[in-house]
Image 1 (cartoon, rainbow, N blue to C red):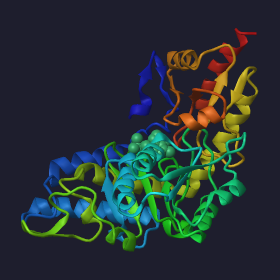
Image 2: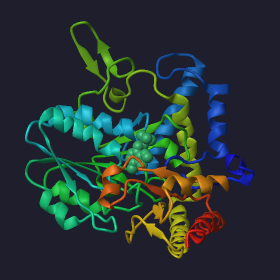
Image 3: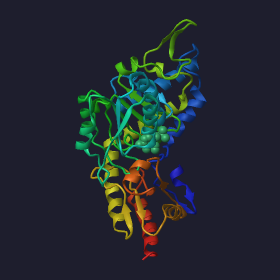
Image 4: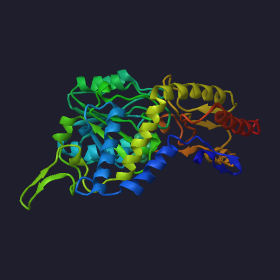
Length: 394
Ligand code: PLP
């Protein structure tokens, strides 16, 4: 088990969960079982292993459907990750429907993955990109958001949890206001699905994306949820095998969703691995995970705040997992290296979210981020190193 690794002679403390999560043995075993007993391409053959691989892959789709509370398996598209999912929506639905003068709204909290695809489309098509501002704690300003919505707003794309600050956004309200204005909504769930129960139907999101590797599954697999009617009226993104009903040189007819968005051979084994990760967290219970992490985050926030010279970046009332901070007198890199010396893994840098860090008047932070396998002892070890650095400064 990787969490038993030694780093610099110390027991590893993994506090880089917002970047990626560690994998339960059941996930590793499931992928290994797939290659030992089921490996085949899917959907296209009469032989036994094709049936096993197809069953395993489609069972994983069913697990994702239930995990997200989607109405149908047809609404679950496997992609490489959240980034690919957002690009898929931008380049298929976006390219098909958005034209000069239309408006897209994103929030100031977004990861680059939910900025760059929209900015590129905006530049190409003459769209206006508007930004929902946040307050000094990193909380969405709903009143300001309401003022941005107009009859030209076609899309609102925002994150459910900020990867840089940990802010939990008021997703239901953002979505309801967008729908009232006649806009569609994409929710970036990359940082939410591992920390809280999510129900896409209750949210009423038009699309919802996440990455397997941030929810204890493998890298290279992720999901786009989309409402079935929207998916079926959207032109496919990539063309190739698996997504067509019939091909002649004169005409091509596409499958309905999800296959119309899964051209070529997908990441079959890792989709199956993601299914095992979903089984794992479902067994623990997302509500239990959320409650445990909430208590741990409160503990960690309280401890870290006591350290002289620590400035917490992102102090929203409603937060998940993330504790961004800077320490007076030290570069963030120095803090990260000192922690690594003690076997503690945290991220330092801009976390692919430069606009929100600049809004908070910093370029980079140190970012410990929690998961259900972290403990108060992990937090104590982190705080001990930061306190030692701080005390040698004063
Ligand atoms: N959105 C958010 C909020 C993220 O935190 C991340 C990754 O850190 C992404 C999108 C992109 O995820 P991936 O790199 O797995 O595609």
